[in-house]
Image 1 (cartoon, rainbow, N blue to C red):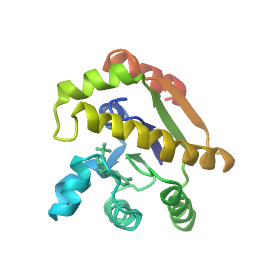
Image 2: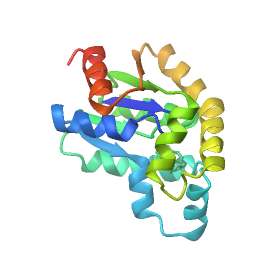
Image 3: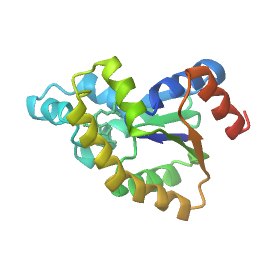
Image 4: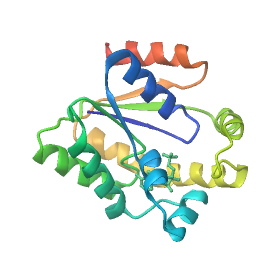
Length: 178
Ligand code: AMP
């Protein structure tokens, strides 16, 4: 299992999909699953404002997706974990199910490049103020969780996310030794 992390607009989904195409990974994106599954207005509203949803809800979505995956060992997890509690949950889950986390891909991007990409994409949560909010959330909540994985000796591969899709994909393959 590989975890793909980075700020909104860093290219997580695009690079996850590229690894699906080139190396047959199964891509599991909590954002995609949640957008598809969540009909309750309060949940939708939170997502549209860029607020994180509750840990338990998202953990359940991930557990279901891993249970349904053909090869849960060959999965790219995109958008999860996003909090320290989720990270600890995933650590326990993967240990209990013998699904080792082989590495973390950390896509690095500056705010202006990310904003430019997101405004082009134009999802309902891609407005400038919401993007800024998601950036702030990433800094404060997500970064401590990366430290947690470092403490567990999981390799963190920091990759420059600037440039076009193919360029970044090549960097990913080189860094992962694929
Ligand atoms: P994404 O497509 O990964 O940018 O996720 C879109 C939105 O889904 C986020 O802004 C959150 O509202 C929600 N979401 C996705 N993944 C998580 C997660 N791991 N924990 C909490 N909320 C999440």
